[in-house]
Length: 353
Image (cartoon, rainbow, N blue to C red; front, side, top):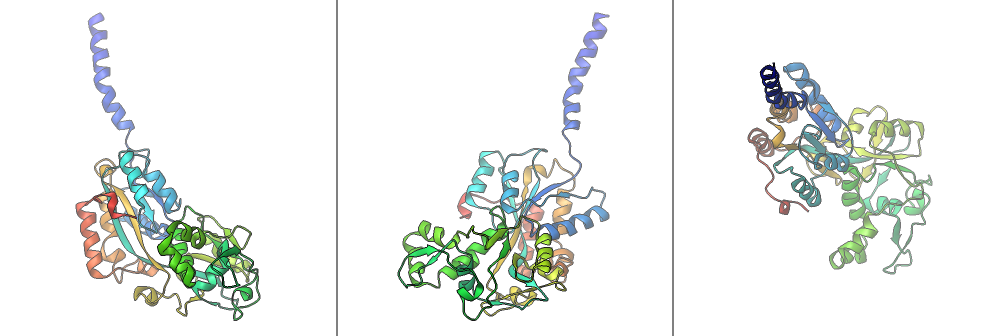
């Protein structure tokens, strides 16, 4: 009897690792990140789930910063396999990946997107400059007396900012600090507007930190309202309030063109063509990042990458362009398809800002 019990005990001990391994499996791809990339990733995930033997990936819209925080927390099935980003990964985020054991990070650029400043289609369309937007939304603005100093933003209406604009109250719904759209907006629009003042342009070269504090900090007095990561909700609010503007990715304008319209920025309309040819001044690349270590652990990752980087998806006439994604040139598409196939990881933190 003791011999039988001993054999059973040994058998159980041998079985435990296999049971643990089975319990440690996850049968679907887990994706987090950018609300801008979310609709593109969702379309790819749904097609992938319908046309393959694999389960449809589960995607959460957490914002680029929030997604990269989850992604860089470590490896293993309790962490995401992929994170979407409407900006490139930062040096600090990449270093956090390395610190937490996420060593082979694969970067896939999927295309380009424009950031639009939109309002309801039934409201007057605005023609704005980046200078107008900076003066309307910055927490501190250059002193109107012409001195190289800043004051608390005194502007209440668009007319206060620019006499050619209407006398409507400044109220803009936009993304929170965790959003890649927010990062891109302050860099492309706010910074671009600040540099139209010669002394601020000079300050950027002398003291980058001070310049950034002036150029990147948005006001907190109700003129700029953080509206979360749900861009569809912003669209709904614009329909309800004709005096409010909203900031989000071009794809949401494209999908809701019957309800909202994009303001001209520096005289250029936010259209597919103008973003693709570089005329529209507020555009940025879109990415997603993959944990190479998860490829052999989570079923379907290779197939999902192949679907996303196929010509039928992110190509010039691909189904993602119908959703508002601006395709990359052929040479870039071929490069990132190769990266996705061979799972070439980013080499070092020196590649990032």
